[in-house]
Image (cartoon, rainbow, N blue to C red; front, side, top):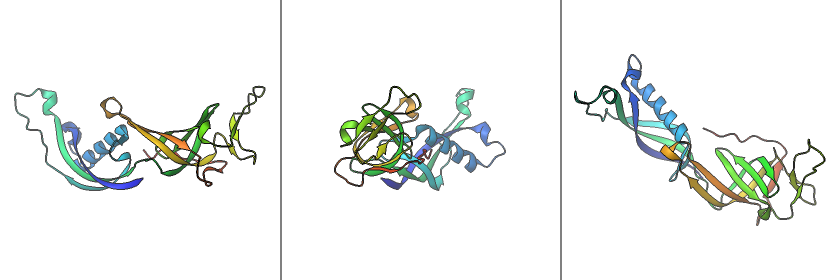
Length: 200
Protein backbone atom coordinates (compact mmCIF):
# COMPACT_ATOMS: atom_id res chain seq x y z
CA UNK A 1 0.00 0.00 0.00
CA UNK A 2 2.36 2.76 1.23
CA UNK A 3 5.99 2.46 0.17
CA UNK A 4 9.16 4.46 -0.16
CA UNK A 5 10.87 3.72 -3.47
CA UNK A 6 14.04 4.90 -5.16
CA UNK A 7 13.44 6.35 -8.60
CA UNK A 8 15.50 7.87 -11.39
CA UNK A 9 14.38 10.07 -14.26
CA UNK A 10 15.60 12.78 -16.59
CA UNK A 11 14.48 16.30 -15.79
CA UNK A 12 14.36 18.81 -18.66
CA UNK A 13 14.65 22.49 -17.83
CA UNK A 14 15.15 25.68 -19.79
CA UNK A 15 18.67 27.06 -19.41
CA UNK A 16 17.27 30.56 -18.94
CA UNK A 17 15.60 29.42 -15.72
CA UNK A 18 19.01 28.67 -14.22
CA UNK A 19 20.45 32.13 -14.74
CA UNK A 20 21.32 33.64 -11.38
CA UNK A 21 19.50 30.95 -9.39
CA UNK A 22 20.62 27.82 -7.55
CA UNK A 23 20.37 25.02 -10.16
CA UNK A 24 19.47 22.34 -7.60
CA UNK A 25 16.39 24.29 -6.49
CA UNK A 26 15.22 24.82 -10.04
CA UNK A 27 15.74 21.17 -11.01
CA UNK A 28 13.95 19.96 -7.87
CA UNK A 29 11.07 22.35 -8.57
CA UNK A 30 10.76 21.02 -12.12
CA UNK A 31 10.81 17.43 -10.83
CA UNK A 32 8.01 18.19 -8.36
CA UNK A 33 5.88 19.75 -11.10
CA UNK A 34 6.44 16.72 -13.33
CA UNK A 35 5.34 14.33 -10.57
CA UNK A 36 2.26 16.41 -9.77
CA UNK A 37 1.24 16.46 -13.44
CA UNK A 38 1.88 12.74 -13.87
CA UNK A 39 0.21 11.93 -10.51
CA UNK A 40 0.78 8.16 -10.60
CA UNK A 41 2.51 5.31 -12.41
CA UNK A 42 1.57 1.68 -12.94
CA UNK A 43 4.52 0.21 -11.02
CA UNK A 44 4.50 2.32 -7.84
CA UNK A 45 1.05 3.94 -7.65
CA UNK A 46 0.37 7.52 -6.59
CA UNK A 47 3.27 9.88 -5.91
CA UNK A 48 2.80 11.33 -2.42
CA UNK A 49 6.02 13.28 -2.06
CA UNK A 50 9.79 13.32 -2.51
CA UNK A 51 11.49 12.20 0.70
CA UNK A 52 15.15 12.51 -0.35
CA UNK A 53 17.17 13.79 -3.27
CA UNK A 54 19.98 11.32 -3.95
CA UNK A 55 21.88 12.90 -6.83
CA UNK A 56 21.70 15.25 -9.79
CA UNK A 57 23.95 14.34 -12.71
CA UNK A 58 25.51 16.54 -15.37
CA UNK A 59 23.58 17.90 -18.32
CA UNK A 60 23.07 15.05 -20.82
CA UNK A 61 22.51 17.27 -23.86
CA UNK A 62 25.55 17.58 -26.13
CA UNK A 63 24.37 20.68 -27.93
CA UNK A 64 26.38 21.98 -30.84
CA UNK A 65 26.18 24.96 -33.17
CA UNK A 66 24.06 23.06 -35.72
CA UNK A 67 21.14 22.62 -33.34
CA UNK A 68 18.29 25.09 -33.44
CA UNK A 69 18.20 27.83 -30.84
CA UNK A 70 15.28 26.34 -28.88
CA UNK A 71 16.83 22.89 -28.53
CA UNK A 72 20.15 24.38 -27.48
CA UNK A 73 18.49 26.01 -24.48
CA UNK A 74 16.90 22.84 -23.09
CA UNK A 75 19.07 21.10 -20.51
CA UNK A 76 18.43 17.54 -19.32
CA UNK A 77 19.68 16.29 -15.96
CA UNK A 78 19.51 12.70 -14.65
CA UNK A 79 18.03 12.82 -11.14
CA UNK A 80 17.93 10.06 -8.53
CA UNK A 81 15.53 10.41 -5.59
CA UNK A 82 13.31 8.54 -3.15
CA UNK A 83 9.57 9.02 -3.23
CA UNK A 84 6.74 8.01 -0.92
CA UNK A 85 4.00 6.25 -2.90
CA UNK A 86 0.57 4.71 -2.44
CA UNK A 87 -0.38 1.70 -4.58
CA UNK A 88 -3.94 0.36 -4.09
CA UNK A 89 -4.19 -3.41 -4.42
CA UNK A 90 -6.87 -6.10 -4.23
CA UNK A 91 -7.46 -7.07 -0.61
CA UNK A 92 -6.44 -3.71 0.87
CA UNK A 93 -8.64 -2.17 3.55
CA UNK A 94 -9.12 1.58 3.06
CA UNK A 95 -11.34 4.33 4.33
CA UNK A 96 -12.58 7.38 2.50
CA UNK A 97 -15.32 9.98 2.24
CA UNK A 98 -18.44 9.42 0.16
CA UNK A 99 -18.55 12.10 -2.56
CA UNK A 100 -21.57 11.04 -4.60
CA UNK A 101 -24.52 8.68 -4.22
CA UNK A 102 -26.49 7.23 -7.15
CA UNK A 103 -29.24 4.63 -7.22
CA UNK A 104 -26.74 1.93 -8.21
CA UNK A 105 -23.89 2.77 -5.83
CA UNK A 106 -21.62 5.39 -4.30
CA UNK A 107 -18.31 7.03 -5.19
CA UNK A 108 -15.72 7.27 -2.43
CA UNK A 109 -12.56 9.38 -2.24
CA UNK A 110 -9.63 8.06 -0.23
CA UNK A 111 -6.51 10.23 -0.10
CA UNK A 112 -5.18 10.57 -3.66
CA UNK A 113 -7.61 7.87 -4.83
CA UNK A 114 -10.53 9.79 -6.33
CA UNK A 115 -12.45 6.95 -7.92
CA UNK A 116 -13.48 4.13 -5.58
CA UNK A 117 -16.86 2.82 -6.71
CA UNK A 118 -19.04 0.93 -4.23
CA UNK A 119 -21.85 -0.87 -6.06
CA UNK A 120 -25.18 -1.48 -4.30
CA UNK A 121 -24.55 -5.18 -4.98
CA UNK A 122 -21.44 -5.01 -2.74
CA UNK A 123 -23.15 -3.41 0.28
CA UNK A 124 -25.33 -6.18 1.72
CA UNK A 125 -28.45 -5.23 3.70
CA UNK A 126 -28.38 -1.61 2.53
CA UNK A 127 -31.26 -0.20 0.54
CA UNK A 128 -31.48 2.97 -1.54
CA UNK A 129 -33.46 5.86 -0.06
CA UNK A 130 -34.52 8.90 -2.04
CA UNK A 131 -37.51 11.20 -1.70
CA UNK A 132 -38.46 12.76 -5.04
CA UNK A 133 -40.72 15.18 -3.17
CA UNK A 134 -37.83 16.80 -1.30
CA UNK A 135 -35.14 18.67 -3.25
CA UNK A 136 -33.10 19.27 -0.09
CA UNK A 137 -32.79 15.61 0.90
CA UNK A 138 -29.95 13.90 -0.91
CA UNK A 139 -30.19 10.16 -1.69
CA UNK A 140 -28.42 7.65 0.54
CA UNK A 141 -28.17 3.96 1.39
CA UNK A 142 -29.44 2.74 4.75
CA UNK A 143 -29.58 -0.47 6.78
CA UNK A 144 -32.30 -1.56 9.17
CA UNK A 145 -30.14 -0.40 12.10
CA UNK A 146 -30.31 3.12 10.53
CA UNK A 147 -26.60 3.29 9.63
CA UNK A 148 -26.21 5.35 6.46
CA UNK A 149 -23.90 5.63 3.49
CA UNK A 150 -24.41 9.22 2.37
CA UNK A 151 -22.41 12.14 1.00
CA UNK A 152 -19.87 13.24 3.64
CA UNK A 153 -19.86 9.94 5.53
CA UNK A 154 -16.52 8.20 6.08
CA UNK A 155 -16.65 4.55 5.05
CA UNK A 156 -14.23 1.68 5.64
CA UNK A 157 -14.16 -0.68 2.67
CA UNK A 158 -12.22 -3.45 1.02
CA UNK A 159 -10.57 -3.24 -2.39
CA UNK A 160 -12.12 -5.76 -4.76
CA UNK A 161 -10.40 -4.79 -8.03
CA UNK A 162 -7.97 -2.15 -9.30
CA UNK A 163 -7.50 -0.63 -12.75
CA UNK A 164 -4.75 1.78 -13.81
CA UNK A 165 -5.45 4.30 -16.56
CA UNK A 166 -2.54 6.01 -18.28
CA UNK A 167 -3.43 9.35 -19.84
CA UNK A 168 -1.85 10.81 -23.03
CA UNK A 169 1.62 12.23 -22.35
CA UNK A 170 1.34 10.73 -18.83
CA UNK A 171 -0.63 13.70 -17.57
CA UNK A 172 -2.81 12.98 -14.52
CA UNK A 173 -2.61 9.19 -14.62
CA UNK A 174 -5.17 7.61 -12.31
CA UNK A 175 -6.32 4.47 -10.51
CA UNK A 176 -9.89 3.20 -10.36
CA UNK A 177 -11.04 0.86 -7.61
CA UNK A 178 -14.06 -1.36 -7.10
CA UNK A 179 -14.97 -1.36 -3.40
CA UNK A 180 -16.86 -3.86 -1.26
CA UNK A 181 -18.45 -4.05 2.20
CA UNK A 182 -18.80 -7.83 2.08
CA UNK A 183 -17.12 -10.45 4.32
CA UNK A 184 -15.93 -8.04 7.03
CA UNK A 185 -17.99 -6.75 9.95
CA UNK A 186 -15.73 -3.68 10.30
CA UNK A 187 -16.67 -2.43 6.82
CA UNK A 188 -19.21 0.35 6.57
CA UNK A 189 -19.73 3.91 7.82
CA UNK A 190 -17.44 4.98 10.65
CA UNK A 191 -18.22 8.71 10.86
CA UNK A 192 -20.75 11.27 9.69
CA UNK A 193 -18.17 13.77 8.44
CA UNK A 194 -14.61 13.63 7.24
CA UNK A 195 -12.07 14.82 4.73
CA UNK A 196 -9.80 12.78 2.50
CA UNK A 197 -8.28 15.26 0.09
CA UNK A 198 -5.55 14.16 -2.35
CA UNK A 199 -1.91 14.53 -1.38
CA UNK A 200 -0.80 15.90 -4.70
